[in-house]
Length: 347
Picture (tube, rainbow, N blue to C red):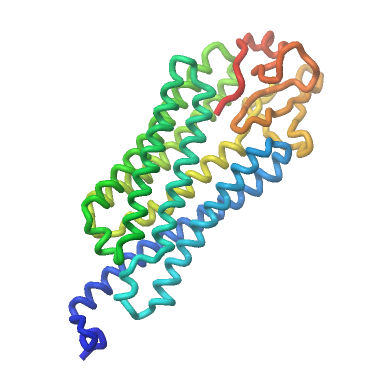
């Protein structure tokens, strides 16, 4: 007679628990492999940011530090989850069926990361949008907040349930989780579409060199939005169509790190429109002390400095001018390219 049967648990129950644990552990391990790979990219982007932009505002550095810390924390929590399965509860499927605290807490940390990233992009969109469209980023922020508070309910259910089978079998758990993922996907789609619309409007009446920069920014916005939206949609589809299973875990673990990397990429990707740059974009950060670069134009060397505003592609002439630093180009470049004055920055 098996040990489980001696303890009053029928062998078929032990077999079912073992199968459930294998499924949960397998999905968690695949997600952990994907997540640690993305975490490596987070580390690289954080290093590049700190090295390239030492004179950025303190709030920008704090934002990067918070994203890095939260991403690190989620990686540690998933590592603890797997350690609990394969070491602490090894050979005990009954114990493995219980929800580890690290799994429930990781869900809430990912929720915080998602809210921060979506509100960050909504804020940048708010700054770029014309007055008649500023309601769009406000609506996006409201959707993000709604998803955040709904996901708090999901986390509370994870903490209150003793086992995965109990939590996953609750209809309210699956419905609430699916709504959260749907709202997050909708936010990503709205952010992407709004950025594309705003940036395309900026293309009118500007030079071909600057148009290339705008096109590159549009490509970045599309890529960022597609990755996170697909991840959320797959998460939602698996959660809604296969209740009682945890096949959604790889997407859950990946999506938080995708949000982190999308914000870090937006901070690190700051092209500058140069008068004689063939590609339309000049790398920034060659001079780490001044965040500036020099461009040869018409036999003269001109110095350009990058605005410290994150996500900015603002071009500023280092020489004094009657135009403020927030002008899109200096007076000379407006005359050369016949570009109207633009405000602040481009996401």
